[in-house]
Image 1 (cartoon, helix red, strand yellow):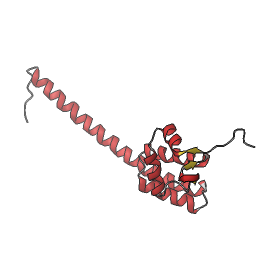
Image 2 (spheres, rainbow, N blue to C red; image 1 turned 90 degrees about the horizontal axis):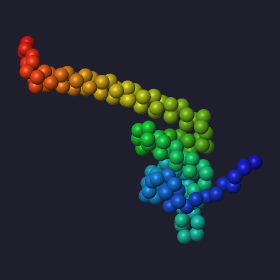
Image 3 (cartoon, rainbow, N blue to C red; image 1 turned 120 degrees about the vertical axis):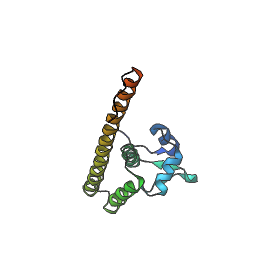
Length: 136
């Protein structure tokens, strides 16, 4: 038995709470990331607890660098399989593993770039101090 009453919130309130625009929420609906939402008289969108959790999940995936296309694949997988976390989780792990590899490559590239910059800085510093290195 739930301890708190679950209430629906309107799109403006939800956007404000999450620090995003109503346009962002509508866009996520248009491209299929959000499930069907309830509407009040006059067509005002309302969101229940599950909708809010799904939107928070989408925002977290975006923060992690997951593309909208990958999110759409996850959403389709999730919805086709009656919102089963058992089916979405392996695909999510696959996507996250791919991103880990990309991040590792970026870190390696940045480490190499840092090493080059430190070398250039050292040579420039030597030149400024009159210690001109010999060119081989």
